[in-house]
Length: 406
Image (tube, helix red, strand yellow):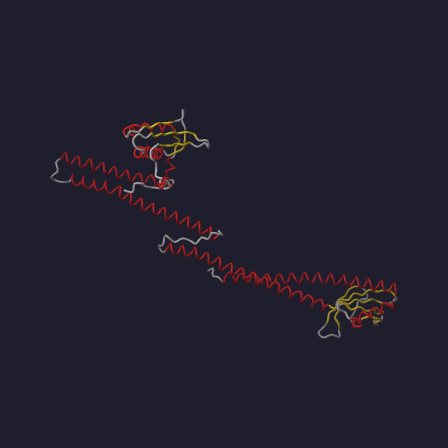
């Protein structure tokens, strides 16, 4: 289903109407139960009061009191009357005479002289001497009160739902706008604009976090593509010279006028240039395998101290030729680690080679291996040469970086 702005709004409206219907049903049921319980208590209390009144002051006084109350009106929806066994009204409301009142207890009856029919809930309480106290509740008054309560509740619920719906609609528009901004960034990138970035605000909500993650991913992709272009340029640069020399050697070797010694020397140069080109390609392949995790299959347990000693012996003459000194600081016993022997040797060799090239004459190069406090083995190559320029410190760990752009 396509997520347009009105779909969530329509769904929210349907849910709101369902909630409104359920809420009104709950209000109606709860209100009806509460009113019925309250009205029953009022009727029983009134019957108890008038019964006690008749015992203390007599039936005549009760009839007079009921007459006075009837003349004052019945704002609470109750009518009170006193009848004899023949059904004649002795005092109070004459409406009870037309009702089919029970001899005793409760009964819901219909007034026969009303159109439309009027329901009454009648409580009959015999008070002795063939007389019965009648308490009649007009259920229409209860229904009117319930209707008013229901209308008020409906209005309140509708206002609440309208407010919630307005807030939800505004929130939905905001969410879609933020989502469209991120989608527009993705579309711009798909169209070829690799510099496009998702808008990120400083207050940092969930969409800002999503946009920041997307931008970080795009920055990483951009860095990888830049690295790929650099690798391609470097590979083309590194292979152009040996391939050019290889072609010249082959041209010399196939020259019909070339003498045999010159032909053989040209072939030897061609083999050397071929080996150099293959070594470059092999190095790139090793890096690719290492980054993809394929080299883990060649991981093995080796003695790091022995490997460092081997590399130190290999580069000591190189350092001496450059007017430098190479010192080894190794542990007494073996220090076993899990590593790729070939890549580790190549990495240590690259560090030592760079030190001999750039540390300068008279520099002291140090190769040490030790077990760190955190339990990890550490191999360090250091020198007291000029070091990497401060502006390039962040670049030396990137792939295929050459500080000498030439």
